Image 1 (cartoon, rainbow, N blue to C red):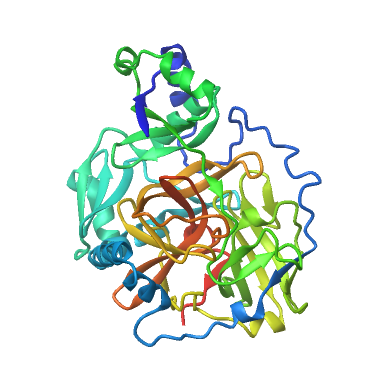
Image 2 (image 1 turned 180 degrees about the vertical axis):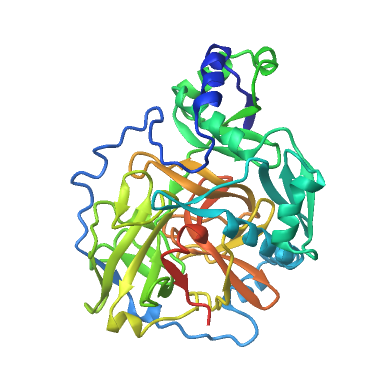
Length: 450
């Protein structure tokens, strides 16, 4: 993937004005991006009358006392086993740092105009894992500036501070304004924690993207840039119709099958529920019926969010790609914290940070792995879905790849004998895969962990 410095000097005056008048707040819903007019996107598309779940796939039995089926799969393949060993070691080493990051993100989660968002302090510039330490980047690392973080995370927290030039709010406010001026198809855009910059990825198959890169003198314009912006040519991700527990489909023939993320409970009221992906429900409405393959009705679609226009019910956030199904008495009989590979989920991780190792499992691909490279970015999944905010990007480790049928698959961090759920799989390209973190569903869904 090629990287370039992009600084169109023609828009510098507009950018400076935007920094003065634009509210410095991350996460506000905004759909005014080039070539992404999807106001009629779901009109007459994929009418949804029912969903089907196989009884056998919900009623999962733990077949292994020591090793899960995923563990055994790794043992059968030398490459997978080497990657599994390295990943497992790093997950154990990173465990405390990732836990501390979760505390920080939980504190930043704020209700704004009825929506759950991440609202960052003006001195905060992102955080990442460095082996067993969480590095918190700030624009000021004096004792007065860091005392808030020390008090919040505790005296024994494995943290250190790094001073950088630009806050996350500055990068996002300027960067998203900059994106609106571009006339090329987008793959993703968002802040780049480790480089303290704003990253934009354009579709490498588009002539407009290539021309945009070639038409600028990056060395000259870089010196006049208010903040650092990088541009890459990359491959557009494809939503991969999902799983994590059981297959689900829109018809009795199980075509276009996707998957259950995990069963659990509604956050308010403790009623049984099921988490899956939102992009599986284009055109659906509240109370869309959900069925098992034997015809038994197990519940109703309650709320979903996937992109700007894929909204069902009251999702309570503009972020993520997820759907919650309320289970009835029959569906409630199949509540489980087990995945299809025999892994038992015993906890949750709100939003794994940059440099943390995560693993996925789905209906089509038993196991894939990678390292988080960006968090809370905007990803463009094409006209069927559009822009999805608040997504995590992960670089693959090894040759195993998520594919069609894996969307909604469970994202897992394994620490010792514990397996914590970090989100649901959304889509993938050749070099990266993407997931929707649990941070965006904590207010509405609680995974079963026992």
